[in-house]
Image (cartoon, rainbow, N blue to C red; front, side, top):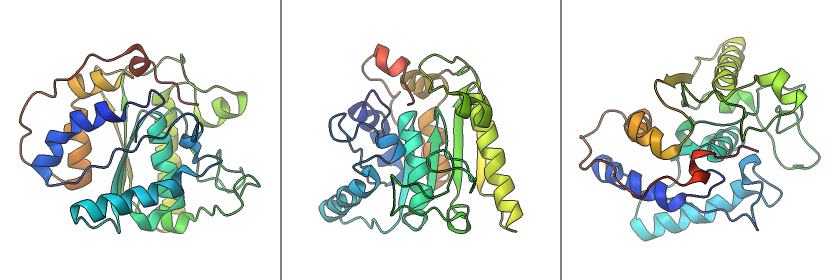
Length: 244
């Protein structure tokens, strides 16, 4: 799942070699700003439900089984990915959430998208911690992703989650693990803070070995990837993804 720069083609190119090595079918949807401007929060037009026919089409074209998926999202796409897991835990085998700007906490006192309490804007959305806490998730964030630039800020979010992507990732993972322990469930959410890496997707791929980390978290160790992941230079939008 792409971020707000909507760089799905770049993601597909840079991940294609890993898919060959791991024997995975890659679906890289593009959610337009016109139709799904708020897809990262699942959206008024329910981007999470729009994903289902995309997966069905990919399965019909390739013969792959899409009953459960391995899900990755970056920046705004990481917001979508973890919220999709929370809304549809039965559809996801494993997920990797990288460089999210902010999170839905497993807090029943706060309305979605800040917490899991039902919202009037999403009357059919139910988030059950007994289900979504069972899905293995790996959270990745760059050690240098400390700036508040292009980061959604509000007094409510800052107080609940922190001031930077690193702080917010730590706090969310801790909250998810505590929520699992409170229900006598094995904590399935883990965190990796990646050294010498900021927020740029391209640089995360190069310096932070994002592809290796993602595919090993989703599928386990695989064959070495052929090639060096070369592709077009990162654009300014990719360097400064906004996470609204």
